[in-house]
Image 1: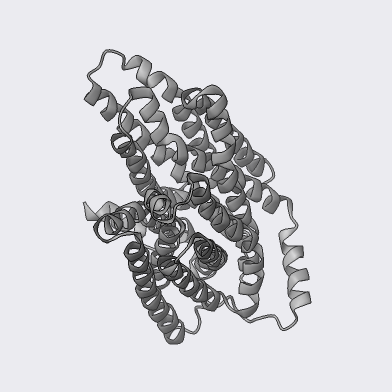
Image 2: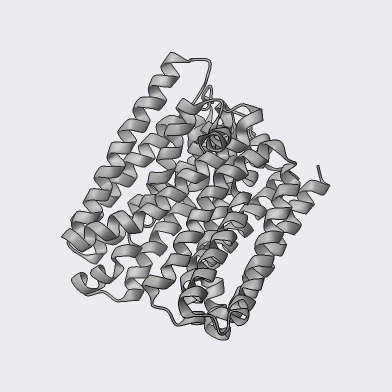
Length: 414
């Protein structure tokens, strides 16, 4: 049982990949601490659901705007320093939210958390890219993605559970303490390993003395056809994945009439499938042609998402519990196919990342990710409003075909 798991997690630099993966989990955890407590915020602060939703909007706006600057700064001052500073800032922002007496201060806290969080992907991904061997970069990116999935799954359980027991303020402060504790652990392992193994750089190499020259060099390194296509791949992938995540629960509820709590099982298994795929997909990315794997995963996701509209039709007459079980398993399979593309995409980016400019490169690409993540739920929310959530799912499948075409375009040019 453990041997297959060992094969997909056996990376060249586990003492760096492990802590970075843990910090990825806390970053994703912090990104969604607000949704589980929205009903409590509405009641306690007397705000509308629209105002509550804007708390997430302001987070992702800051998260998007500051990723590219974060990548440039990381290449200048050192990636590990900026990553750790960002984790500290996120912990502080969440703690401030827990102490906020009013909605306005909550907005400020979310803005701080978003700005701080914007530093993580340009630094965390580039550190792994810099230190990991070429033979195991796919595995390392898969392990990294698995950590993020665990953080995403943990937020509703930890924050929602604490809020139910002791209120939303205690839940947020508890989340901040958890994040701060993990940050201390990450700092210890990363900094200790750097001192003990000076040949392995986790600070992005020698800092460039001239900021203007650093920016010009980074711009030159990023202004290539491959990077432009990878940015589009990242944007389209995030748009599709966020749309699927956002509307999975709504789809199951609309198709079956099940309560939200029951329909959420499908969303949970989607993430479980994603976590599995992140690990095994990373290993596949080291053994297979990455372009072919990306194309195959995108097409498989498109076919499965498109076919979802027929699943309940074929299940007509089945007992209610059986139909729910079928959909839960179906979305777990969708989670597997869609999350395979994450380590593939990150490994392809890492192939093109030099140590001097890897922070800038991942900063550019993750800006595309943030734009896609912000636009996906909005675009398909409009379609779901116009057509109904069930009819909107084939449109999400069409985006999957676009993603496959972009992987194919990258293959043609390479």
